[in-house]
Amino acid sequence: MSADLSALGIAVGHATDGVGATGITVVRGVRGAFRCAAAVIGRATGTRELHAASPFHLVDRVDAVVLTGGSAYGLDATAGAMRWMEERGRGHPVSGGVVPIIPAAVIFDLMPLGTFTARPTAAMAYDACDTAAPMKIFDIFVIISS
Figure (cartoon, rainbow, N blue to C red):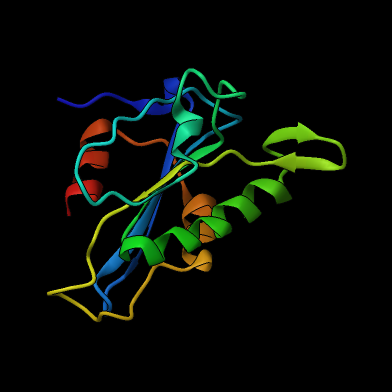
């Protein structure tokens, strides 16, 4: 059974480096920010701005969530999602513009498949934002688990 996420206003985009065996998934709001939460489990976690998913954070919504490969190196790819949001005026309003709020988490996929030096890029994150579309929950599971 699957559920349509378009009613929730959530879109999912993905970009893959097939040769390097890595990729990036972006979950973003269709028209704006959304609420999220996160639980960190494990001893070797890699995250960026994860506290933004906390109920104690200054802002109560995020503009996107990035799930990336490339271990800690992959966190740099989030810059592409930041640029995509800023170009569209999406983010926390501040004097002079907006600051997109985008928590990110990584997985260690540097070995044994692909190439150790392959990492998701900002261009991949930008493309994932640009091609994101509302998906069914089953489709999201397939993307995350593939």
